Figure 1 (cartoon, rainbow, N blue to C red):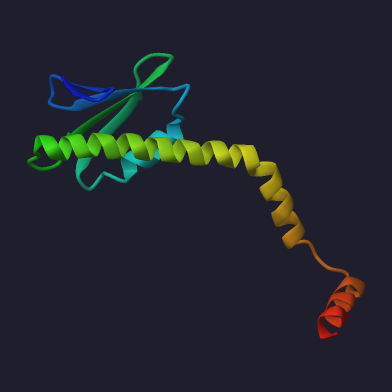
Figure 2 (figure 1 turned 135 degrees about the horizontal axis):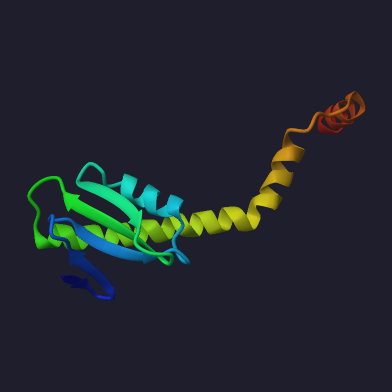
Length: 122
């Protein structure tokens, strides 16, 4: 078992490393996006471990050092958090964003178009 500050990483019998994340804090999409960023260096499989947790199993594709593993763990956790915050913000501001997009792409009547061009020319 490797402990990285407050992150506990276990090693499985088939030489995968394992991080367990709470589903209350990390949605599926955030975890998958974070893992996708590192598929060039690690092989992943992700699955629920119980009703409350998701397990992220990973194995380096090449020889690795403890530093590489430590750096990866920190980066992975930061990326998962980053993606989760983005998802939370998207949900929080979805209504406002949709209103802005709707207004930006709404058709203008000829009168509105004429009055806008007249005011710009003045």
